[in-house]
Image (cartoon, rainbow, N blue to C red; front, side, top):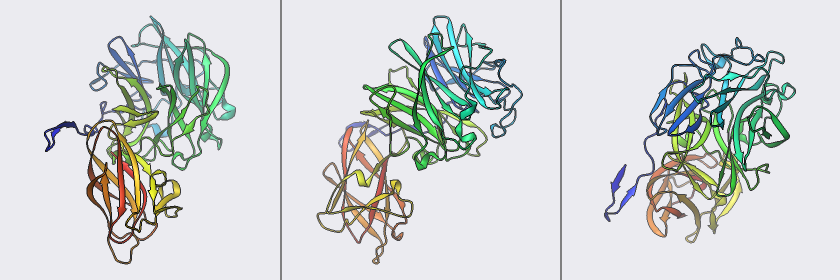
Amino acid sequence: MIRLLAAAALVLTTAAPISPVIDQNFADPDVMKVGGTYYAYATNSDGRNIKWATSTDLVSWTVQATDALPTLGAWADPTWSFPPGGPGDHGVWAPEVFAAGPRSFVMWYTAHDRASGKQCIGAATATTPRGPFEPQDTALVCTPEIGGAIDASSYTENGRRYILWKNDGNCCAQDTWLRLQQVSADGLRRVGAETQLIKQNKPFEGILVEAPTLWKHAGTYVLFYSANFFGDDRYVSGYATSPSLRGPYTKAASPLMTTDAFAGAVRGPGGQDVVTGPDGKDRIVFHGWNPDFTYRAVYSRRLDWQGSRPIVEGAKVRYEAEDAAFTRANARYAAGGASNGVVVGGIDFADSRVSFSVYVPRAGDYRLFTRYANGSDGGAADHTLTVNGAAAGTVDYPVTGWDNWQTTERTVTLKSGTNTISYGKGVNFAELDAIDVA
């Protein structure tokens, strides 16, 4: 959408409305481009082991009627069902498909291992991306001693292909590690040493990390992943970065996509994949629950970058107050559920400032969410606001009590690139926890 500013300059608004591109059950989407067609593959549903769909633009999709994987490998139990998966669940999850040659396509999939009773990863092959894929008799990754193996994905570099996956430790009170290992050129055999990349260790991750996707941007390896319980709005997507393929990887302080980041328009965003769009720009494709949590639909959003930091179109980007530049103010550890556990207070003087450096990929009007607490005896409080040195009014805070963190929202106009948003002393007193920009 385009709007006309008073100065007659045309700028893009921040994001298109958020709605599914596949509005039916199509969880854990994996996307591959062959020629001018995108192929998407999904966790079992509607009586099919692997659902699949086609598109030319990542927006308009045709869900195909056939099963991309009608038969499972001999190692897998086709009768096993995972109760949270819903009616007709076949227990076949999270496919990954890639081209191993001009007429050679490989699918990795998760299913229930007959011998161990755990989840394992199998492989299947086809001569076209439309399938049907014919399964291998033995599993590719099967590690029951560490809970099993799920959520395979593929990464290639310098002519070598790698498999990433998760050990399913949350099934049995073990850690969940995202792992990386080279595979043979045909994608049917693991070779060399495996490397543990990251495990669950942040509060927003709950007891697990899963669904790895590795992408390289501007020389940095960016490991996208999902975390927490998949079955409701606690599910999130996060990311970690590294200068080298095998790590070490450093996680971002906050998740990349959450239900709150999309203001409830997407519930439990996860199972993400990254792909280059027809315009040459990056896209992130992921699932989210419908409003009554009966199926997971597919969303496709523009993926922008600030250096190695990914920015998802329409999702709030969080900036912690303690990471801002502040003068005549102080950071303190806070109770009461503060984001990242630290806030900035003491913004009590005429020269007090808390200045956030905020990056946006396009100029336009953005929503600014300020997370604050106001325990002033005198009632409502506010901070003066400046954007890129120009006065922009105030941010107003009703009384909440100290350490009772609430959010207030207003609109700001930002330029493309880096902006400075500064808070100063206003009426009464308030502390800042974080801001979100979307």
